[in-house]
Image 1: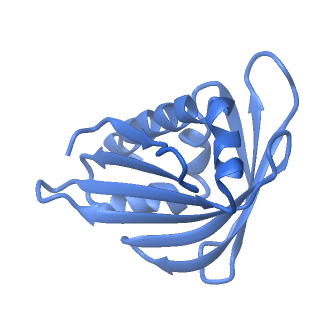
Image 2: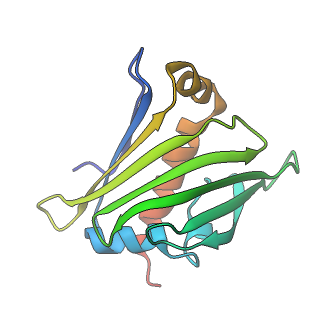
Image 3: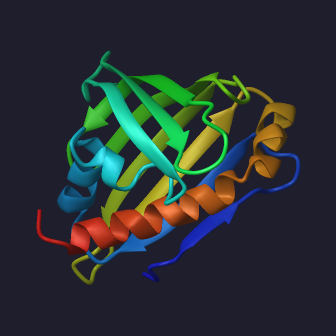
Amino acid sequence: MPRTTEVLFEPGRQDIVVTRGFAAPPDTVFTAMTDPALIPRWWGSRRFDTTVEEMDVRLGGSWRFVTRHREGPVTPYAFRGVYHDVVPGSLIVSTLQFEMGGPGHLQLVTDTFEPDGDGGTRYVNVALFQSVADRDGWIPTGMETGIRESHDLLDELIGAPH
């Protein structure tokens, strides 16, 4: 699977589908996405510093991250959510919501981690919004660039010794 990020916005749909191939196995990618010590090393792109204020990766657990621009506006952007299903190495179902600094629309997010047949991972993220208008409000925010940069940082991280 190619190690590039595909972000799909189909007109008239309520979801955004993100697909990425990683050279590391699913357990490694899952760990990098669920270890609070590793999140600041890749989440939010190269333009932001991320602080993990809460991250309890289990059914009913919650999370909260705050990002700040490294340069420019000092306004923090806070994100939070609740974990609805966690299957180590293969699945995370959670919510994501802006707490401040941007659109507050709730998303139901499903992350799947599948072996790609070459020892790597096929990662798929589906963010389901409450309406097409809510989804369309995210498209011009620069989130696509941020997702791609975050995935590149994650790819660098999982290829590096911990």
